[in-house]
Amino acid sequence: MTQFPPLNERISLTNFTQRIAYLVNGREGVTDIWVTAEITDLSKRGNGHGYCTLVEKDQYGRSVATLRATIWQNNFAAVTRKFYATTGQPLSSGMKVALQLSASMHPLYGLSANVRDIDPSYTLGDMERIRREILAMLQKEGLYDRNKELTLPVAPQRIAVISADGAAGYGDFMRQIDSSPYKFYTLLYPAVMQGERTVPTVMAALDRIEETIDFWDCVVIIRGGGATTDLNSFNNIDLARRVATFPLPVIVGIGHERDNTVLDYIAHTRCKTPTAVAAFLIDRLTEVAAYADSLVRSIADRAQQIVSVERERLSHREALVPLLAKRHLDNQEKRLQRLQGLLSQVGSQTIAGASRQLSEIEVRLNTIATRLIERNRNTITSFASIVRDSALQRLATASLNLDNTSRLIAVLSPEATLSRGYSITRVNGHAVRSASAIPPGTILSTTLSDGTILSRTLDPDTSAPAN
Image 1 (cartoon, rainbow, N blue to C red):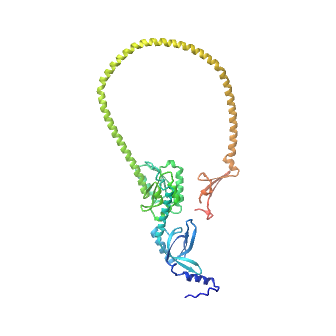
Image 2 (image 1 turned 180 degrees about the vertical axis):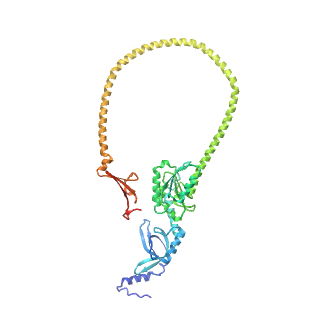
Image 3 (image 1 turned 90 degrees about the horizontal axis):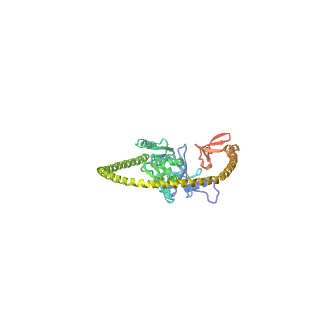
């Protein structure tokens, strides 16, 4: 049994750490214990050992416990290989993991934990928990069915596509679209579809699409298959809210049939794969074409029925026309004879009365015209003078206003503003109004009075240009 100096004596730091090591190393309760934590600062040294820090955070994201951990060389390959085989993704910082740990106290290196084993299923389960929490939050906010409630056009042909340029999934989608018998108008809005840049680049693509929203029928977000953990970026509350509230129907085809992300639940339409999205759009137009063909056939059949009925009616009328025409002509001849006698009598009386009325009207018109001309001569002369004076006054006022406006424009023009020492900074032709809206790596164009300066924003954490 290890002997230590009495407690009332001063001891060295080495002796004190040896006491801690005696109490910790190999003791029950801190050996081969399964622990859940977030892994950070994971690295592999030249000696083959792996080092990291384990962190536990509260509901506000604050660290409440930390511990250094070591994966010794003889165990590092087995642990990382086991994790990759189950999740399809390398073990990396930022993941929630379940590790089998044994406490280790070294007098020189201090307290740490040795990693003996890993349970990859816990990481997958944590991803499922996060997805369910996000879906519950969207239900509470009333956004879960918001995009589903939009009306997808009967024949969607103008498609805005968000995918990775050159990706196999995007290529499969376009090959199927291009080989269909229908005309589609597509435009790719490139985005990163895996990793930490997925959310900002997909949301930026949605922003660009919204700028020309009147041109598009719907938005398609597609990504080919891969490991389950590769799709974690699509389980993001900010991206989910953006898709749920997007003013166009969003169709997603992400991963394989077995994969489910938050976007699959809240998008207008979920298809299994990128090719399934293409098949959905083609089937939609096929249904429309079939319906149009059925309408054409119905119209043709109805027209044929109407023509047959009308042909029978015409045949019946054709037989009646000679009899009806002779009877009608006889009646009209008798009527014309009666009217002829009446017209001679009434015409003479009407002409005589009209002659008398015209003579009386002629006398009245001459009298009235003479009075009106005399009465309005003075009024016209007065109005002419007023109109002339008013026109001159308006011209003078307009000229003064034009001079004032010209001087104001010269003072407020961009050239005058720049000459006083100001500048205008733009990104992609748009003026910058807020520094917070400019991500690292953005190319800025700054216009001065005597030229233009191009610059790139820096990452505030590294003070170096962003890649």
